[in-house]
Amino acid sequence: MQIHKAAVVGAGTMGAQIAQAMSQAGVPVILMDLEPENVRRGIETIRKIYQASVEKGKMRAAEAVEKSAWVVGATDYDGFRDRDIVVEAVFEEMEVKRKVFTALDAICPSRTIFASNTSSLSISALAAATRRPKQVIGMHFFNPVYAMKLVEVIPGLDSSSETVADVVALSERLRKIPIKVQECPGFVVNRLLMPYLNEAAFALQEGAASSAEIDEAMKEFGMPMGPFTLLDMIGVDIAEKVSYILYDAFGPRMPVAALFPELVKAKRLGKKSGAGVYRYDNEKDERMQKILQNIREGTGVVRTRFKPERLVLLMVNEAAICLQEGVATAGDLDLALVAGTGFPPEIGGPLHYADRIGLDTILTELQRYAKELGPRFWPAPILKRMVGAGHTGLKSRRGFFTY
Ligand SMILES: NC(=O)c1ccc[n+]([C@@H]2O[C@H](COP(=O)([O-])OP(=O)(O)OC[C@H]3O[C@@H](n4cnc5c(N)ncnc54)[C@H](O)[C@@H]3O)[C@@H](O)[C@H]2O)c1
Image 1: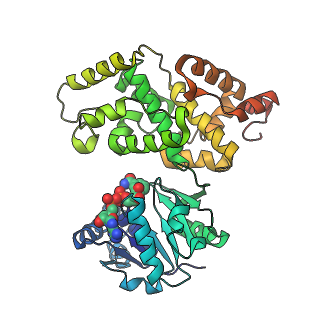
Image 2: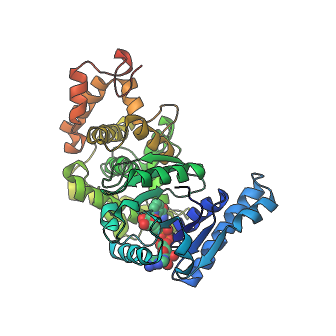
Image 3: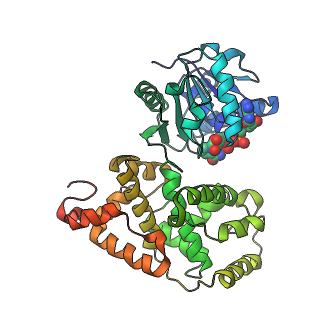
């Protein structure tokens, strides 16, 4: 089905930006929120995104006016009767979202696709709140939407192939890179990124290196910013919440570093609260040293070693487990990490990285770290199988990719 008209429910951080992306692609879109003030703010956000494009010379002023006119605000569902797709971006709470889906089901025509921008909730469970589970799907955008190319497209248990195809086509029209991901906790990007951020936190709390040293080393590896700068940007509370969801799903493979809850307890939520791992007021940071000291005394784990590989290996291993589970193809896993986290494009993603280093080396390193630091480094069974079969990567011309 060609998508002609869209709506977005929830005019917060994500909803407003998603509506902007639709309008830029020439798709008429209703931006709906229960709160009139949030609708107003959402429309203002859209205006500012267009204004920035004009100021950067990316768009003519007349074009910006013309495109922003594709968005109309609303505080009810009255205009939803002719929509082909509705993207839901309300609070990350199952009950709130299910109520929205049930209400949409009653008002929208039978053809309408419902896409959720949820970061962590089950698409299949949301679909079950409607009488059209075939047309319910995950469409996970990344913040800021205008800069982040990736969209994870997540079919639920009942989503039809037509729904998947329509949402992939719409994502491409929005000039995004859609990647099909099988439903699993954290989807691909958060499932691979969180172990990386957690490992950075473990290294810091164990005194392996300072936050600035770890950030610098990961930038040298090629990441666009260090893990702690990123953590402070995402919000320590958000990262903590996602980490617990992943721990709940995957167990000892994804323990939550004590640093996360300790920072949250100290109200250091990141840039938005004035301090996270870093302070943003140029004052000396004695509090952070105290927090780290307390964690060290509590866990008794000190003076481990830090090398960038320690963080990257966990991404490689989790990508291998995703591949093993059929969550996404090897190419899509790598593309998701490059487009969704800024993993160095010249390396090509964690699986290309592993092929280049050699899967035998990756396996040995993981085993060594598992002995030293625990089961979160336990190698994915697929790695052992591949090494046993001589599929060691670039040097044998067969690894996650063929050469
Ligand atoms: N913020 C991010 O970086 C990010 C990234 C990817 C995905 N997400 C996901 O996107 C969704 C929205 O997140 P956000 O950060 O934009 O939230 P937000 O809190 O900024 O905005 C949510 C909006 O939904 C509105 N809302 C709540 N209940 C509603 C209802 N019943 N009907 C209509 N509007 C309603 C609220 O008034 C609010 O304006 C969540 O599922 C979140 O997990 C967020």
